[in-house]
Each structure stands twice: as structure tokens, then as C-alpha cells.
Image 1 (cartoon, rainbow, N blue to C red):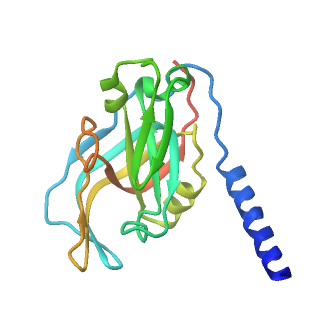
Image 2 (image 1 turned 90 degrees about the horizontal axis):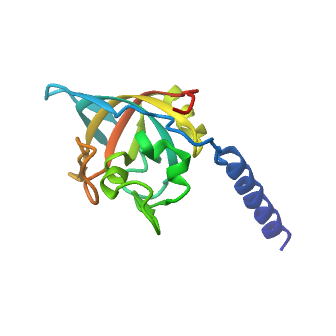
Length: 201
């Protein structure tokens, strides 16, 4: 019985620490990340190996965005190389005055939003936010991803990649910000991620 109490205490302590470490940041109203993500196609043929996975770069990728939500995964097909998803917003989807009217969540590698009254047009919500599967390219990127907090403004650089596993399983990245639903998420090989201190516009 005492062992179970110790285990329960450890779990509660870890949960409390994890919540504190990733507790949301609260921002003043105003657009914090005005620019749309940038990408450029790359030539085919280049592949990268990550254990049982092969990554095929499709485009260079760079963006500054507000973190709307984060979700960590351990058990699904992509978890061994992409343990974290970030829901990211830019333009008016980085403005607290807009986001205060939108409820955001993540589950099963999808990002969900709900609103009782649209603060901006629906298409703008969909085109100015996205769920992105983040693959750290190095130890520094992995550490930065572990520390990301909801509400933080981050600058990300890397590549959009397709993923294939040795047994034939594959997952392709989205190459546009205008799609939604299954297949609408970006898979990002993150070469660098940093906190971006910006003033509201």
C-alpha cells in the first residue's frame, strides 16, 4: 500500500511540475506574429534517415507564430520522431482579442477550435492557424520544443517533410496553409526554434 502512495505522489508531483513548466503565457491584445509562413520547394531525391523512418524534404520552411496549444505524444505511429504537436497562429490568430473568443484543443494529432460567435471570418481562422507535427533535427531543437509554452511567440526554421517507415507506413506533409482536416497538417523538421520577443501591433 505504501508503494502505491509513493507512486501516486510521484505522479502528482510530476504532473504539477509539467503543468508549471508549460503553464500558458498571457498576452495583451494585438497581433504578435503578423507575417505568413514562408516556404520554398526543394528538389526531390534527398532523404534523411531517423531510425526506422526516412524523411523526404519537400520545402524549406520558416515562420514566426504564436503557440495556441501544445500536445505531447508517446504511443502513436509518429511519436518516435515527432513527440510534440504545436497548434500555431499568425496574423489575427495571434491576437488575444481574437483568441479570447475561440476555444482551442488538440487530440489524436488534430487541432480543434470552437467559437460561439466568430470574431473574424471562418476562413481566416482556418488559413491563419495550423496544427504542426514537430520533428527535432538536433538536441538543441529538442530541448527548445520541450520548453515551449502556450501563448509564447516562437520563430521556427527547418523543412516540411514527408515521412515513411521501414514497413511502408507513411505520412505526407501539407504544403499549403489553406487546407483543413486529415492531411492538412504540416510535418516540420525543426532545425531551430527560439522564443521571439515581439510587441503587439
